[in-house]
Length: 195
Image 1 (tube, rainbow, N blue to C red):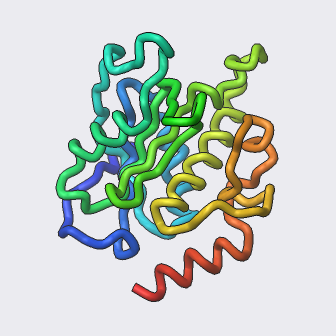
Image 2 (cartoon, rainbow, N blue to C red):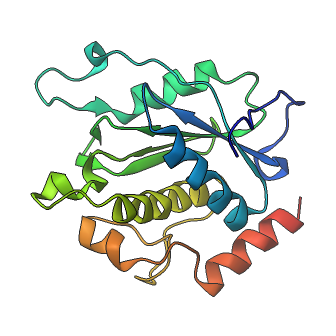
Protein backbone atom coordinates (compact mmCIF):
# COMPACT_ATOMS: atom_id res chain seq x y z
CA UNK A 1 0.00 0.00 0.00
CA UNK A 2 2.92 2.38 0.55
CA UNK A 3 3.10 4.78 -2.35
CA UNK A 4 -0.49 4.19 -3.45
CA UNK A 5 -1.75 7.74 -3.76
CA UNK A 6 -5.05 9.07 -5.04
CA UNK A 7 -5.55 10.39 -8.53
CA UNK A 8 -8.32 12.62 -9.82
CA UNK A 9 -11.28 11.29 -11.77
CA UNK A 10 -14.57 12.63 -13.10
CA UNK A 11 -17.29 13.96 -10.76
CA UNK A 12 -19.61 11.12 -9.72
CA UNK A 13 -22.57 10.52 -7.49
CA UNK A 14 -21.92 8.91 -4.12
CA UNK A 15 -22.95 5.37 -4.98
CA UNK A 16 -20.98 5.47 -8.24
CA UNK A 17 -17.76 6.23 -6.41
CA UNK A 18 -15.10 3.62 -6.63
CA UNK A 19 -12.52 5.26 -4.42
CA UNK A 20 -12.08 6.21 -0.78
CA UNK A 21 -9.44 8.83 -0.06
CA UNK A 22 -7.84 8.47 3.37
CA UNK A 23 -6.87 11.96 4.51
CA UNK A 24 -4.59 12.15 7.54
CA UNK A 25 -5.14 15.29 9.60
CA UNK A 26 -1.74 16.64 10.60
CA UNK A 27 0.46 13.69 11.54
CA UNK A 28 -1.00 10.18 11.58
CA UNK A 29 1.23 7.09 11.54
CA UNK A 30 1.65 6.07 7.88
CA UNK A 31 2.06 2.37 8.77
CA UNK A 32 -1.23 2.53 10.66
CA UNK A 33 -2.98 4.02 7.60
CA UNK A 34 -1.30 1.50 5.27
CA UNK A 35 -2.73 -1.28 7.44
CA UNK A 36 -6.18 0.36 7.49
CA UNK A 37 -6.55 0.88 3.72
CA UNK A 38 -6.76 -2.78 2.60
CA UNK A 39 -9.29 -3.54 5.35
CA UNK A 40 -11.50 -0.72 4.06
CA UNK A 41 -11.07 -1.93 0.47
CA UNK A 42 -12.16 -5.40 1.55
CA UNK A 43 -15.33 -4.12 3.28
CA UNK A 44 -16.47 -1.77 0.50
CA UNK A 45 -14.93 -3.36 -2.61
CA UNK A 46 -13.52 -0.01 -3.72
CA UNK A 47 -10.00 1.35 -3.90
CA UNK A 48 -8.74 3.06 -0.73
CA UNK A 49 -5.75 5.31 -1.20
CA UNK A 50 -3.73 7.57 1.04
CA UNK A 51 -4.05 11.28 0.31
CA UNK A 52 -1.75 14.09 1.37
CA UNK A 53 -1.92 15.16 4.99
CA UNK A 54 -4.20 18.11 5.68
CA UNK A 55 -2.83 20.63 8.17
CA UNK A 56 -5.35 21.79 10.76
CA UNK A 57 -3.87 24.11 13.38
CA UNK A 58 -4.56 23.67 17.11
CA UNK A 59 -6.03 27.18 17.00
CA UNK A 60 -9.05 25.58 15.28
CA UNK A 61 -10.01 23.94 18.58
CA UNK A 62 -12.73 25.34 20.81
CA UNK A 63 -10.54 26.96 23.47
CA UNK A 64 -13.01 26.25 26.27
CA UNK A 65 -13.60 22.59 25.42
CA UNK A 66 -10.18 21.76 23.98
CA UNK A 67 -12.06 19.92 21.20
CA UNK A 68 -12.61 20.43 17.49
CA UNK A 69 -16.15 21.01 16.23
CA UNK A 70 -16.69 18.15 13.77
CA UNK A 71 -18.47 20.36 11.20
CA UNK A 72 -15.40 22.61 11.06
CA UNK A 73 -13.21 19.62 10.22
CA UNK A 74 -15.68 18.30 7.62
CA UNK A 75 -15.69 21.72 5.92
CA UNK A 76 -11.89 21.86 5.83
CA UNK A 77 -11.65 18.36 4.36
CA UNK A 78 -14.39 19.09 1.81
CA UNK A 79 -12.65 22.28 0.65
CA UNK A 80 -9.41 20.32 0.16
CA UNK A 81 -11.13 17.63 -1.96
CA UNK A 82 -10.62 18.06 -5.70
CA UNK A 83 -14.15 18.15 -7.13
CA UNK A 84 -15.46 15.63 -4.57
CA UNK A 85 -14.77 12.68 -6.90
CA UNK A 86 -14.24 10.25 -4.02
CA UNK A 87 -15.43 9.69 -0.48
CA UNK A 88 -12.95 11.31 1.90
CA UNK A 89 -12.14 9.54 5.16
CA UNK A 90 -10.27 11.94 7.43
CA UNK A 91 -8.38 10.44 10.37
CA UNK A 92 -7.47 12.79 13.21
CA UNK A 93 -6.10 12.73 16.72
CA UNK A 94 -8.19 15.77 17.70
CA UNK A 95 -11.01 15.12 20.16
CA UNK A 96 -14.25 15.86 18.25
CA UNK A 97 -17.65 17.13 19.33
CA UNK A 98 -20.84 18.31 17.69
CA UNK A 99 -23.95 20.15 18.78
CA UNK A 100 -25.78 18.23 21.51
CA UNK A 101 -22.93 15.71 21.93
CA UNK A 102 -20.11 15.92 24.48
CA UNK A 103 -17.92 14.00 22.02
CA UNK A 104 -18.14 11.87 18.90
CA UNK A 105 -15.85 9.11 17.68
CA UNK A 106 -16.61 10.22 14.12
CA UNK A 107 -19.19 11.66 11.79
CA UNK A 108 -20.25 11.60 8.15
CA UNK A 109 -21.66 14.20 5.80
CA UNK A 110 -23.21 12.25 2.94
CA UNK A 111 -23.94 15.42 0.94
CA UNK A 112 -20.26 16.49 1.07
CA UNK A 113 -18.83 12.96 0.60
CA UNK A 114 -16.76 13.42 3.75
CA UNK A 115 -16.36 11.17 6.78
CA UNK A 116 -14.13 11.76 9.80
CA UNK A 117 -12.90 9.50 12.58
CA UNK A 118 -11.01 10.60 15.67
CA UNK A 119 -8.58 8.20 17.32
CA UNK A 120 -8.40 10.43 20.42
CA UNK A 121 -10.98 8.54 22.51
CA UNK A 122 -10.24 5.23 20.79
CA UNK A 123 -6.83 5.05 22.47
CA UNK A 124 -6.79 2.87 25.60
CA UNK A 125 -4.56 5.50 27.26
CA UNK A 126 -7.54 7.87 27.27
CA UNK A 127 -9.20 5.49 29.74
CA UNK A 128 -6.11 5.13 31.95
CA UNK A 129 -5.07 1.78 30.47
CA UNK A 130 -1.75 0.83 28.84
CA UNK A 131 -1.27 1.61 25.16
CA UNK A 132 -2.50 -1.18 22.88
CA UNK A 133 -1.84 -0.61 19.17
CA UNK A 134 -3.91 -3.60 18.05
CA UNK A 135 -6.94 -2.48 20.09
CA UNK A 136 -6.56 1.04 18.68
CA UNK A 137 -6.48 -0.39 15.16
CA UNK A 138 -9.60 -2.53 15.73
CA UNK A 139 -11.54 0.38 17.24
CA UNK A 140 -10.48 2.71 14.43
CA UNK A 141 -11.45 0.18 11.77
CA UNK A 142 -14.91 -0.27 13.33
CA UNK A 143 -15.52 3.48 13.44
CA UNK A 144 -14.23 3.94 9.87
CA UNK A 145 -16.57 1.20 8.62
CA UNK A 146 -19.43 2.84 10.53
CA UNK A 147 -18.86 6.35 9.13
CA UNK A 148 -18.21 5.10 5.58
CA UNK A 149 -21.43 3.08 5.88
CA UNK A 150 -23.26 6.37 6.43
CA UNK A 151 -21.48 7.90 3.42
CA UNK A 152 -22.73 5.01 1.29
CA UNK A 153 -26.31 5.50 2.53
CA UNK A 154 -26.65 3.19 5.54
CA UNK A 155 -28.49 4.29 8.69
CA UNK A 156 -27.89 3.16 12.28
CA UNK A 157 -28.63 -0.49 12.99
CA UNK A 158 -30.31 -1.99 16.06
CA UNK A 159 -27.98 -5.00 16.03
CA UNK A 160 -25.40 -4.20 18.74
CA UNK A 161 -22.80 -6.38 16.95
CA UNK A 162 -23.16 -4.59 13.58
CA UNK A 163 -20.65 -1.91 12.60
CA UNK A 164 -23.62 0.40 11.95
CA UNK A 165 -24.73 0.29 15.59
CA UNK A 166 -24.40 3.75 17.19
CA UNK A 167 -21.65 3.81 19.84
CA UNK A 168 -22.34 6.03 22.86
CA UNK A 169 -19.29 4.63 24.64
CA UNK A 170 -16.05 2.80 23.99
CA UNK A 171 -17.68 -0.36 25.39
CA UNK A 172 -20.22 -0.31 22.55
CA UNK A 173 -17.43 0.18 20.02
CA UNK A 174 -15.53 -2.76 21.51
CA UNK A 175 -18.69 -4.91 21.34
CA UNK A 176 -19.23 -4.25 17.62
CA UNK A 177 -17.77 -6.34 14.83
CA UNK A 178 -15.64 -4.64 12.13
CA UNK A 179 -18.21 -5.49 9.46
CA UNK A 180 -21.92 -5.12 8.72
CA UNK A 181 -24.66 -7.49 9.81
CA UNK A 182 -26.40 -9.42 7.02
CA UNK A 183 -29.22 -6.87 6.78
CA UNK A 184 -26.93 -3.85 6.46
CA UNK A 185 -24.66 -5.73 4.06
CA UNK A 186 -27.68 -6.51 1.83
CA UNK A 187 -28.79 -2.86 1.99
CA UNK A 188 -25.35 -1.67 0.94
CA UNK A 189 -25.13 -4.13 -1.98
CA UNK A 190 -28.70 -3.34 -3.07
CA UNK A 191 -28.00 0.39 -3.06
CA UNK A 192 -24.77 -0.05 -5.03
CA UNK A 193 -26.41 -2.38 -7.58
CA UNK A 194 -29.31 0.02 -8.18
CA UNK A 195 -27.08 2.81 -9.40
